Length: 290
Length: 249
Image 1 (cartoon, rainbow over the protein chains, first blue to last red):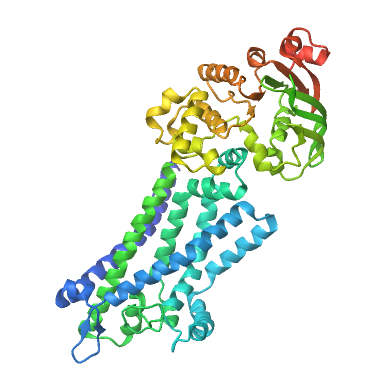
Image 2 (image 1 turned 180 degrees about the vertical axis):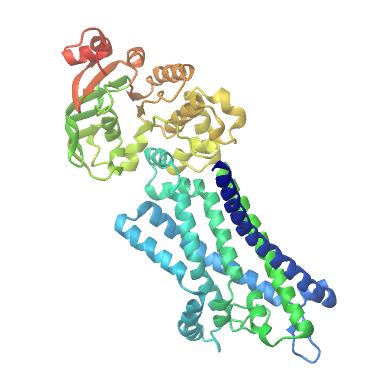
């Protein structure tokens, strides 16, 4: 009896182990595949020409494979989304965690969850139908599909993760800290800004990094609103292409060096996201220590 | 001595349950008043009424009057009241920031930005709280690195930094070891030259050691209030006698 149950547990253990290994295998296979298929084009084009070339003309008679426009667009787009989304998200989190009364808080919290669940193509659609014409009219530019439109869409898309994580961090701030501040004659608002937010700073920082990760990896929504022309992002109203959309928009008809270069772009994006993940782990560890 | 805080006919309810019943008390200036009584008797609730920290609890209803400095506390700006009537909590609760920033927090809140003045205030407050010598070389270090007793004296320094006239202490030594407790008691005795102290304590020896006046609370009522010596040696009420002689509580 004892023996067979041991055998049974062994089998179950084995199955679970295999399931775990499958996940790890996926990560490894994707990483290796990307590295193997991404490196040849970089070698062929030259690392400097590839990363710092300002022109992308993959289908021209004399093709150019410079991805600096995509890199800068992804960086600017993400930073812009953070600049817009973080203040809104953190302040909303302060409101939700500290000021809102029960029913308001519940309703708003659920709305935020719904916002997180909306498919990115829907964000893209709304951006295309509302935001793009809006920008065209408001700023009197020939085309509203631009870096600005992408930034705004991304800012909205990263709000839920910033709000949720910041609320969790703010709610974990011991009430004793806030009581101490109030008892010194500070107003509730002063208390939130000078005690609660600093005490929750590693959690809030982690939420920002998570938002960066989401923004830099987003493809569908930005493809629909950014205009998708491989320009250098010189102005907010420039039609631009992100790292993600660069891969997505040409993959279906590419071949030869062009196709290999798209894999190299994916590799660059992958490295960006790995760095962001490392940063996230760093902040989360910091929070645990405190 | 003239009273600095006077409560008349003070009642307080948490929702349906009455926590304070018709409290009448006049707390004299520059002395230590101890509030004693068994758990749940209302002594902490009364203390927190004095700087209106009870306002923060939903469902609290208060009737009667409390005057600070001759004016009803409910008519005063709550932030200014709390500046004048400081508080030290049961569990040491320094902010997770440097020792310096902890003490400077209050003055900064009240608009002092000048670096030199802040330096002076921080040093004076830490000296007054008898912790300056222990921390003067590590003002920039995180306050959470201090021992429990040091943290509590830091919290006292933080409260003193806004120059209150009254210091409310809610069982300030209940989380501390005997030596740290002794230090806080010595400090309280010293501070009464400048400040009025109202201290809630579970420890009757502590009340006897440091206080000038003692108020005995039971089931939300103020049973007896008088000179500490009289309360402990010759109480007028049988219930007080039973409590101070250790028959219950």
